[in-house]
Length: 378
Image (cartoon, rainbow, N blue to C red; front, side, top):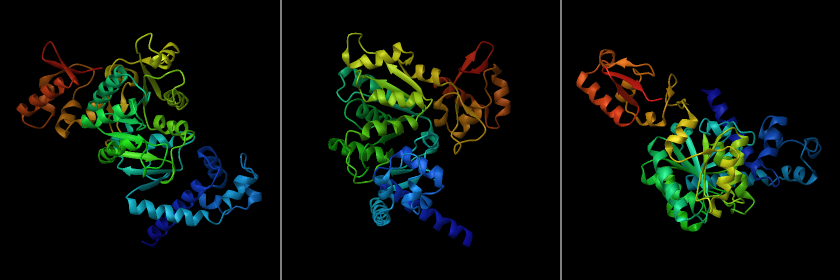
């Protein structure tokens, strides 16, 4: 019992130190990762002398002085108290609730502020990003793709901005799916302000996430930095309506560097709003027309560990199946199997199995072949 208490106290001290480290002026995600790699823990970083800190590559006198400020821990205590009062969770990188895929990137945030809930199925996420000043065509396509992907079992990730981002979030919510909004500022004060109601909905059906303290305003330089988190959370990024200078292209570049899939939706050939998308397609990015293009590129997907440990998802739609549907589907493979074999292996009434097979056919998870045989869709 005492070991558990000691472990909890140590975790609390390290979280407090991580918070203090994140509040130090001049400490970005890469520098924070470097310091933790050199000294091991945030507590160890903040007990170093200025002379010791100056031996770390990238640390100059001004940054070393900022790390030695005595005010850092009181500021961290105040921030943690404020988060607790506001119902905002603080997730350190070593937390079991920290998104696994995001933790894999080289410049993962040391701390995430979260308003809402993350679920295991959020590991199967797709980002949809694009222009704030989108056309009617772009908005329509963002809504169509977001709704289709949400119904297929994907969590939709975007940046809560005007235009394409808002269309993607809203369509996912209307489809009963999950969506995550990644903010450039703090999760307390929503930007743009007219999206406050949308943010509240997202917090009920997903989460708002940021690496920034609650009182941080979303200044221009933070948006490109934020975009690496959008791509880092996802299996892939879909770009819809991006000009050649669009911030959405930063997200696409981050995705490529992180080994994520990148998709671009084409627009009219003479549309300046889609110039960036057309350049991506010309350079080899996957052209996307609908959800099937995304599923085909991603291929079979591993089930999130908290959902299952012994199977592979051939389509995200499988995550929405009930236990009986999953049991029946597991008896069918890419090799044709007679219906009678399935009826014999599934220990429930044949009428229920046949009804379940009909549902799986309607969802395009299995198809019937001549000779009363079944096979999974590729």
